[in-house]
Amino acid sequence: MLTLYYAPNTCSLATHIALIDAGAPYELKRLSFAAEDQRKPDYIRLNPKARVPTLVTEHGVLTETPALLAYVAQRFPAAKLAPLDDAFALAQIQAFNSYLCSSLHVAHAHRMRGYRWADEPEAIAAMQRKVPHSVTQGFELIERDLAGPWVMGERYTICDPYLFTLAQWLEADGVDTARLPGVMAHRARCAALPNVKRAIAEEFA
Image (tube, helix red, strand yellow):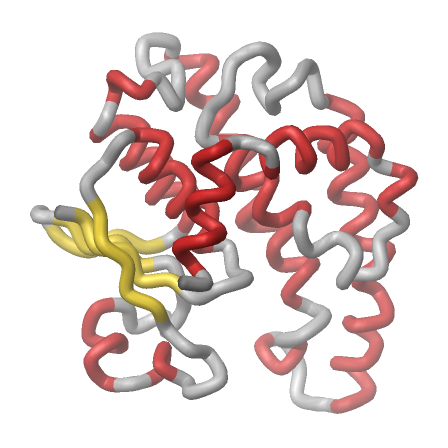
């Protein structure tokens, strides 16, 4: 049994969806950021980064969304969530998910968590003002390269729940979504999937 530690409205949703897609046996452990559950000793022992998601497996603890998504795809190959037999295509998936993690998610985080990068209120405010521009720029790169109904074309992969999760924050980040018709169509397509609906319902149960 896998255990996913998550918080609602965070990137942990991507792994949650992938677990359902894979038909994996899992249980959920919900954290409240308002109560600072992520900083409590029991959780820090699991994940000293004090963030989500955290996935507890029989072999140990995993963190970082790209790693968790790759683990799910490889652990449950029958679900065909990644082209495990094609080194180049698999690297493309890793490149896409790494970009979401290292660039887009960080740009989004500047809106609420500028204190991670600066102490001065003026600097934090400047970061917040930049968010609509920086997030838009990042998503425009994705918009340009979307090749089909799914990120990798005709085949649904572990890229899709991750992009869907981050795309849910566009409006709050001040992005003009009219500039991203492909991304918005992808978001709507994912939102209509039964597994996505199930994951969202479970996160708020």
